[in-house]
Image 1 (cartoon, rainbow, N blue to C red):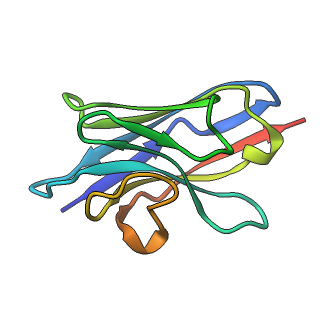
Image 2: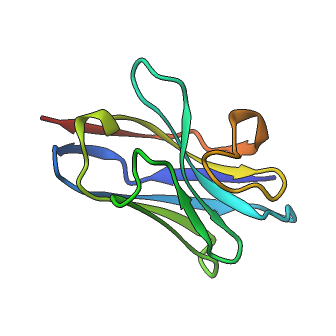
Length: 126
């Protein structure tokens, strides 16, 4: 059974940093792409960062240059390093495993996500 468990969320001030982790138990599921979605107040859920099995990352314009996605295959863990956080980054962040080989925010939608974690809350205050 596949399980994705996020951690590392919390409250920081504008300009601060957080590092999210996602412990992945994937069993025999063979995946190509993992990443992070977020649900911010008043907006639809959006994919913000993805990484392929061979470590090719992709970011949404809203986080490019501030967020870094990485993975530790030995630990089966996905990370999201978030720097220069803004109030508008506030929301619930979800770790995901996608279907198929599409692996960028412009290609991945909620419908193409195969597995979701339960999420971790990030709150950025002014």
